[in-house]
Length: 319
Image (tube, rainbow, N blue to C red; front, side):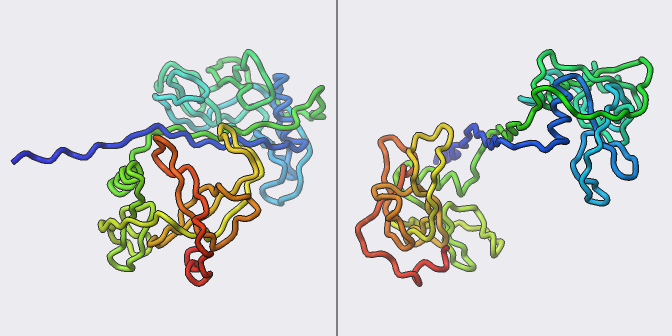
């Protein structure tokens, strides 16, 4: 007898990102504009504490804070951690230390990178200074990093009016995570079935709910799921939303409908786009079926089957 070949281990790069635009209040606007101009600003609380980075509300009293002060571009490391494998988008592309730096004149510490030749060159209490970016736009990255410093300490914080020409009033916050995803046994079987235009879930041996996509274990009962169950292909719209904002890199004209669809035989709903019907005619209980494109590894969208709508009692537990 020959041993069976081990199943292929699936891997794929995955990027999760959610960049969004946020407006800035007067304190954060002054702070970021100051960085663009090579000035570090903080705020002074009612009890005289200087906070850098600045906050807009006192963490003790919750009162609004508006008293801006300028602090030094030099400071002291209060704690640190060595990063020997920098990731994409981090401040430096060579090994560096993450440090908390209490700038001269401040009472709180600022998190940033310290450019140092190795961990032996970093210590709590060491003196550092800001290394400004060559091009500054009004963002925390205007501080390229910190670097070791052996000069004199700065003085006390001094009042600042926060007025700058062409103030920064908004930023784009880019949240992004790049990683390699490898599905487990259950999802590998699910993906393999989709390549054959079938949808396969797994049944819990205790509560008998069929999970689609399968998870390998029942989150309610805490037991492994191994019995595979083919569901669908048709299903019922349990609830939906109308999308009116066009997503980046998604070639779908708005408005369109995204829905939760309970495939026949499944114990919970999965999500999919509804097509083949005007968006304002989609409704709860609508019976739909998958539409596959040539070479597609999952349904492109779902369209009405033409059957009568499902009775509410048939899907109310799956909403």
